[in-house]
Image 1 (cartoon, rainbow, N blue to C red):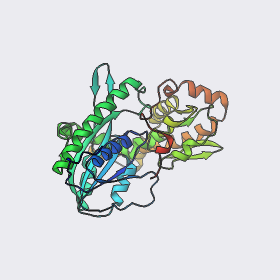
Image 2 (image 1 turned 180 degrees about the vertical axis):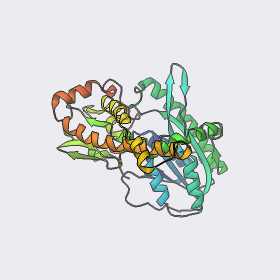
Image 3 (image 1 turned 60 degrees about the vertical axis):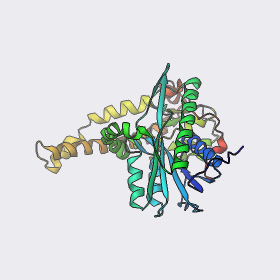
Image 4 (image 1 turned 90 degrees about the vertical axis):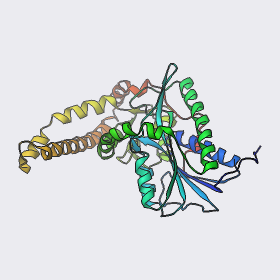
Length: 359
């Protein structure tokens, strides 16, 4: 029952969200539920596969929220593109980024935002908006490409803590007009410190991760991963899923695959990156370009050339890898040496297939 005593300074809440496995969507819904208790008009917009930006519904005093996961200590690239194309305005805005939270025993470990808060704030300020709040939000980590999946108990404990947290945040935000989590300021030095990793991940790392997924011999050609990919990055090559470089490693495909056939190819990516690092491309480029024997310029260029070489070789190697996976014996060999075969998958509790898509 609506509590008529609750009065908000805002009339309308508009939430734009991107969610790979449901964490950001749950946060958006929790916030929307609190807004409904205040009698606010609520609009939720998924930006999956967006082709054009949906202008906000400006009914009375409107609050706009951007809710998204943190990828590589940055906001998800698809959300960055959406905000970059968002129209100018003067409304109040809030950024809410979900981070990879973990729990071991009774100890909760937070994630880091990097520039996932700072960058969208800066972009929105340039567009004329007023920053009314921010919330770094630790939901259960879903990145099982790099760590085992959380137990149901640990994931449930983290989610329940976060639901209580967003309730308190929403109360301050709607009643006082602004709310900034103390975590934003506490973690700010660490977030700035990991900024260089953000740059490396955005320009190189995310493309390497995109070329780490494959479908094992257990794939039954249901094509659910193709239909539900939020960035339209999975295509069929030879009737088998193939991940394009636009993949953002949101982990949705791994989480929803009914046959659990989608894996991360640890036994392909790690050896390939090591072998490619031994190829003398960098030394040859330095000689061809006539760079000085030492200095900061050479060091920077060497690192850039090395990453570009590794990336290009990995793309070529992945294409060959996708072809040889048609041989069942080879496919099984990579499957049984992929850690994700043994790790628990993750989809936020309560999420259904129909929840993933444009709305």
